[in-house]
Length: 175
Ligand SMILES: [Zn+2]
Ligand SMILES: [Zn+2]
Ligand SMILES: [Zn+2]
Image (cartoon, rainbow, N blue to C red; front, side, top):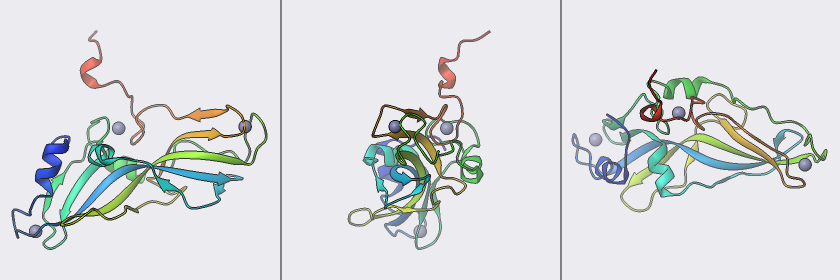
Protein backbone atom coordinates (compact mmCIF):
# COMPACT_ATOMS: atom_id res chain seq x y z
CA UNK A 1 0.00 0.00 0.00
CA UNK A 2 1.58 3.24 -1.06
CA UNK A 3 1.23 6.90 -0.41
CA UNK A 4 -2.22 8.37 0.20
CA UNK A 5 -3.72 11.19 -1.81
CA UNK A 6 -6.91 13.12 -1.12
CA UNK A 7 -8.95 10.51 -2.99
CA UNK A 8 -7.48 7.35 -1.44
CA UNK A 9 -7.57 9.00 1.99
CA UNK A 10 -11.27 9.77 1.50
CA UNK A 11 -11.87 6.16 0.47
CA UNK A 12 -9.97 4.83 3.51
CA UNK A 13 -12.18 6.76 5.96
CA UNK A 14 -15.44 6.33 4.05
CA UNK A 15 -16.43 3.13 5.85
CA UNK A 16 -14.81 0.06 7.36
CA UNK A 17 -14.90 -2.88 4.90
CA UNK A 18 -15.09 -5.32 7.85
CA UNK A 19 -17.71 -3.85 10.18
CA UNK A 20 -19.22 -1.02 8.14
CA UNK A 21 -18.61 1.62 10.83
CA UNK A 22 -17.37 5.08 9.90
CA UNK A 23 -15.15 6.02 12.81
CA UNK A 24 -11.39 5.86 12.35
CA UNK A 25 -8.21 6.74 14.13
CA UNK A 26 -5.79 8.37 11.72
CA UNK A 27 -2.11 8.39 12.70
CA UNK A 28 -0.24 11.14 10.89
CA UNK A 29 2.96 13.16 11.13
CA UNK A 30 1.81 16.78 11.50
CA UNK A 31 3.55 20.14 11.69
CA UNK A 32 3.56 21.91 15.01
CA UNK A 33 4.95 25.25 16.11
CA UNK A 34 6.41 25.33 19.61
CA UNK A 35 7.78 28.42 21.39
CA UNK A 36 10.68 27.60 23.70
CA UNK A 37 12.53 29.49 26.40
CA UNK A 38 15.99 28.35 27.55
CA UNK A 39 15.55 25.25 25.41
CA UNK A 40 12.25 24.12 26.99
CA UNK A 41 8.62 24.65 25.89
CA UNK A 42 7.42 27.95 27.38
CA UNK A 43 3.77 27.75 26.32
CA UNK A 44 1.38 25.49 24.43
CA UNK A 45 2.37 24.95 20.85
CA UNK A 46 -0.09 24.94 18.00
CA UNK A 47 -0.76 22.79 14.97
CA UNK A 48 0.10 24.52 11.71
CA UNK A 49 -0.74 21.81 9.15
CA UNK A 50 -3.63 21.95 6.70
CA UNK A 51 -5.83 19.12 5.41
CA UNK A 52 -3.41 18.33 2.58
CA UNK A 53 -0.57 17.90 5.07
CA UNK A 54 -2.76 15.71 7.28
CA UNK A 55 -3.30 13.39 4.33
CA UNK A 56 0.36 13.68 3.36
CA UNK A 57 1.61 12.62 6.79
CA UNK A 58 -0.78 9.70 7.33
CA UNK A 59 0.91 6.36 7.93
CA UNK A 60 -1.95 4.38 9.50
CA UNK A 61 -5.76 4.45 9.52
CA UNK A 62 -7.48 2.09 11.96
CA UNK A 63 -11.18 1.32 12.49
CA UNK A 64 -12.11 2.35 16.04
CA UNK A 65 -14.66 -0.44 16.27
CA UNK A 66 -12.89 -3.56 14.99
CA UNK A 67 -9.21 -2.46 14.64
CA UNK A 68 -9.16 -3.22 10.92
CA UNK A 69 -6.45 -1.13 9.25
CA UNK A 70 -7.80 0.48 6.11
CA UNK A 71 -4.37 1.97 5.51
CA UNK A 72 -1.03 1.02 6.98
CA UNK A 73 2.35 1.72 5.45
CA UNK A 74 5.80 1.11 6.95
CA UNK A 75 7.28 3.68 4.53
CA UNK A 76 7.88 7.31 5.37
CA UNK A 77 4.64 9.14 4.46
CA UNK A 78 6.53 12.27 3.39
CA UNK A 79 9.41 11.00 1.27
CA UNK A 80 8.44 7.37 0.70
CA UNK A 81 11.69 5.95 2.11
CA UNK A 82 11.11 2.23 2.71
CA UNK A 83 10.30 1.00 6.21
CA UNK A 84 11.21 4.25 7.92
CA UNK A 85 8.07 5.09 9.94
CA UNK A 86 9.08 2.85 12.85
CA UNK A 87 12.57 4.39 12.74
CA UNK A 88 11.13 7.90 12.78
CA UNK A 89 8.94 7.02 15.77
CA UNK A 90 11.86 5.45 17.68
CA UNK A 91 14.48 8.12 16.97
CA UNK A 92 15.17 11.10 19.24
CA UNK A 93 14.95 14.64 17.76
CA UNK A 94 17.73 15.21 15.25
CA UNK A 95 18.25 18.88 16.14
CA UNK A 96 19.10 20.12 19.62
CA UNK A 97 17.49 23.35 20.77
CA UNK A 98 20.06 25.80 22.19
CA UNK A 99 19.27 27.55 25.47
CA UNK A 100 19.97 30.88 23.80
CA UNK A 101 20.06 32.24 20.28
CA UNK A 102 23.70 31.98 19.08
CA UNK A 103 23.15 35.25 17.21
CA UNK A 104 21.59 37.65 19.72
CA UNK A 105 21.52 35.68 23.04
CA UNK A 106 17.72 35.84 23.13
CA UNK A 107 16.34 33.02 25.31
CA UNK A 108 13.12 32.65 23.32
CA UNK A 109 13.15 30.67 20.10
CA UNK A 110 10.49 29.23 17.84
CA UNK A 111 10.67 25.54 17.02
CA UNK A 112 8.88 23.94 14.08
CA UNK A 113 8.48 20.20 14.44
CA UNK A 114 6.82 17.23 12.82
CA UNK A 115 4.93 15.36 15.51
CA UNK A 116 3.14 12.01 15.26
CA UNK A 117 -0.50 12.51 16.26
CA UNK A 118 -3.84 10.73 16.37
CA UNK A 119 -6.93 12.24 14.80
CA UNK A 120 -10.44 10.78 15.07
CA UNK A 121 -12.36 11.05 11.87
CA UNK A 122 -15.23 9.59 9.93
CA UNK A 123 -18.59 10.96 10.98
CA UNK A 124 -18.56 14.72 11.52
CA UNK A 125 -15.51 16.94 11.59
CA UNK A 126 -12.13 15.44 12.50
CA UNK A 127 -11.08 16.03 16.10
CA UNK A 128 -8.10 18.13 17.06
CA UNK A 129 -4.93 15.99 16.79
CA UNK A 130 -3.58 14.43 19.98
CA UNK A 131 0.23 14.29 19.94
CA UNK A 132 1.77 10.82 20.38
CA UNK A 133 5.22 12.23 21.20
CA UNK A 134 6.00 15.24 23.37
CA UNK A 135 8.79 17.81 22.92
CA UNK A 136 12.16 16.10 23.26
CA UNK A 137 10.74 12.57 23.12
CA UNK A 138 11.55 9.94 20.52
CA UNK A 139 9.43 10.48 17.41
CA UNK A 140 9.20 14.27 17.89
CA UNK A 141 11.27 15.70 15.06
CA UNK A 142 12.47 19.27 15.03
CA UNK A 143 12.65 20.55 11.47
CA UNK A 144 13.64 24.17 12.15
CA UNK A 145 14.60 26.50 14.97
CA UNK A 146 14.27 30.24 14.43
CA UNK A 147 14.92 33.38 16.45
CA UNK A 148 12.32 36.10 16.24
CA UNK A 149 14.76 38.71 17.55
CA UNK A 150 17.34 38.31 14.78
CA UNK A 151 17.51 36.29 11.61
CA UNK A 152 19.36 33.27 13.07
CA UNK A 153 17.76 30.00 11.96
CA UNK A 154 18.75 26.37 12.05
CA UNK A 155 16.93 24.17 9.56
CA UNK A 156 17.33 20.38 9.78
CA UNK A 157 18.66 18.55 6.75
CA UNK A 158 16.71 15.81 5.03
CA UNK A 159 13.13 14.62 5.19
CA UNK A 160 11.15 16.39 7.97
CA UNK A 161 9.80 13.03 9.21
CA UNK A 162 12.50 10.39 8.76
CA UNK A 163 15.60 12.53 8.17
CA UNK A 164 16.38 10.77 4.91
CA UNK A 165 17.61 12.45 1.78
CA UNK A 166 14.89 14.69 0.36
CA UNK A 167 15.77 13.90 -3.23
CA UNK A 168 12.92 11.77 -4.57
CA UNK A 169 14.24 8.37 -5.73
CA UNK A 170 13.01 8.91 -9.27
CA UNK A 171 15.06 12.10 -9.59
CA UNK A 172 18.36 10.51 -8.59
CA UNK A 173 20.43 10.25 -11.72
CA UNK A 174 21.96 6.88 -12.42
CA UNK A 175 25.68 6.13 -12.41
ZN1 LIG B 1 -14.26 -1.97 11.46
ZN1 LIG C 1 18.56 35.86 17.75
ZN1 LIG D 1 10.99 10.63 5.01
